[in-house]
Image (cartoon, rainbow, N blue to C red; front, side, top):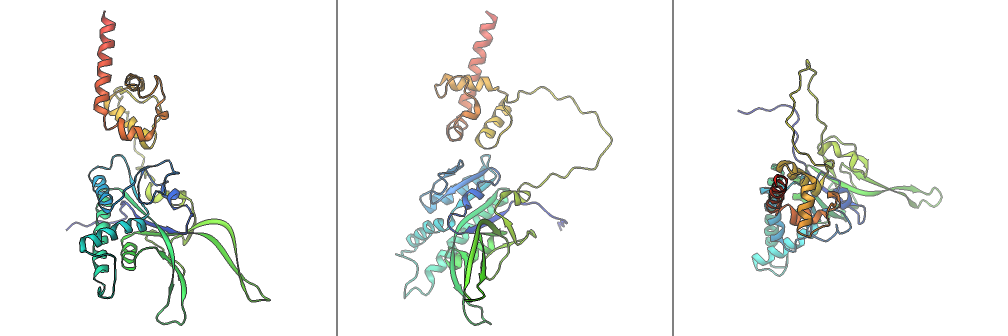
Length: 338
């Protein structure tokens, strides 16, 4: 019997929904080392790494590839899942010979088939989270009338813009469901008894469910927070707890290791620096090798390289670049001995 006690830090499964233009994609881009599965082209104005699938199969294939190799990323973001649902419904109808979901003779069969397909999608994301990668699902929100069984009348409720079954499954799947909106205060005029809404433009994140919106969290967050990733960063990058002080022990003198001339960075540049350190090559050697192939002028700073070019061309052909560097080293050695 394997018994565990205490809190256990795990990759988080987060779902974000909010009104149009509130900043869901920008907020998601602040998560650690993000990779976007951009289903609707909403990240074109953000400096992020992305793939833009055009089918359900491409979405699942991307998730499968990340499960095998994180490729230096720590967060996978599907933006948005309601657009991903469109691709999934097309796939479901094609697999079941349907023109659309529903119909008089359907009796809910097509919706059940779609829910089963969506369940496999969520399972694949859970498998990815089990490998240590955070998952963030962005969604549009919709307002739907609701009625409580023991109350009279109906009321407006913000909820995920998904089919009912898939929305319920997604809310259950997520460890954290966040609702984003502009803060509005409603005041009743004492004379006319009419309600007036006043807004300051302040953007807020709601973390617990009310009669007006869907939200939840399992981390004892305040019910309302400013729309600022700094309010959540401790969840995804928890502080390192130092060990109790001990008697000082002389530190061993480390062997000299070639290090990047530039400070460590995030994203594509950070992955390049890691490869340089692992291969024991210097910034100048990399600059000379790039210049020898005519990709960039000599002495181009690494932080001026296009991140997309680093990830899409340079790192996949790293061994070829090392071959060029080794030839340069051999030529330099031969020149020094003559």
